[in-house]
Image (cartoon, rainbow, N blue to C red; front, side):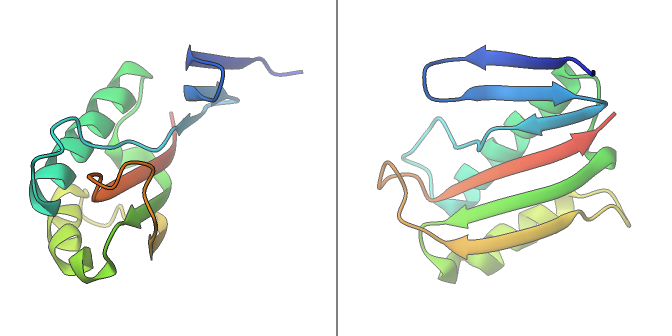
Length: 116
């Protein structure tokens, strides 16, 4: 049986879970919530890069992404950064929906699954 490794665990969730060469990252949000959706998206993508690197992989190994936006009208602005961030030909499967966020100042949240 393969080992499941959980990182940054609290009573509610793990920050990341590794299993059988897969890396599942928890939804990531910006730290500076005074930023607009562009600023928050840049922060989130940087956090994803750092988390993937910390787990021995990178954005060239993305499999799946789930994106939540407070306002779906921000999709074009977020997508512009997303497209620039993705490696050419490396887009994962993805969903992008409007959602009520846990903190109303959060404008975007992204959850990633990657492999090593």
